[in-house]
Length: 434
Image (cartoon, rainbow, N blue to C red; front, side, top):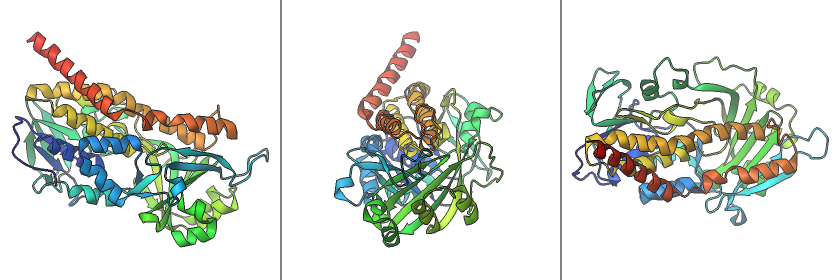
């Protein structure tokens, strides 16, 4: 458990949101002996969502925050079953016959590796359950839904739906894609404050691994696969230590609008079968065997001009919610937490906090917003909608081979050091003016 020992810091941080990003940040702040209080709107910790995977950049960031986080992840994570596939991210295949007939369903486009972790996934709730064990008692407050924040320059006052208030030196909003903190920072009437529908949705479900092996064979069932097609794609990967195959089938319709206030709704199987009626038999059989299926609308954020205002800052999906096509959204939140907790460790006075947030914003905003645009473009590539690749196997292979290195191969330690250097520069500039 992370220590909650008395700190010499003369400031404290409020974290709003008890999902992965908020809990990881709280652990990082405590690891650096920074007093923190975590506010969660629900009555207990819990993650909305199914599987989550992390690349080598994210596991490196976990290690920099607190090695116990990476250890917690690997306790519940599942990798590809075959030893020869441990570094494999996905095998990409055709999910439909090419229109010109030169490729058939199941033909391999490329095997894409992301060493040393490959495809490494878990259920969001299982990872969160492990991490909250690292939080000491007394850090978390539940049933605290944020309404407003007053920032007087030296401290912030948080106002909650239950009528209570809390005063802290600064606040970090980790309250997800529907973030109230984002609205406060950017303005409620600002279009970039609110998530935008991407005209894509996904069917999610599970298949017992023994049934999946009977259907697909052991290689395809127990190692991660993506089946690409026209205006859609489908991925499968092992979860629950190989006992279950997770299935996510994406469909894009540019004339489609999501009209339900709920973003996750029960699935009508006939709608799903209609969406994939031109796909290959193996894909149709996967869809027919899905258990506990539902439909998820895919939203993302337009780029924010800033991730902070005064003593209020944004992290994770509250700052840069993206579609899942790069498999890196949660990893970006881990990177955010690594950078921000290490910058705040260098703060010695409340007057330093705004420069800490500015340094974080300058370093993190370009990289994290690049993910939002890259993920959107990658979804188009998977759906044969990208002009430069379309359905051509060699073009797809070339683009996939070069597309994710900037995410996976980032030197996270150098990234954090650069952010700290920028903070020190900003603090020095301020001192020179005093």
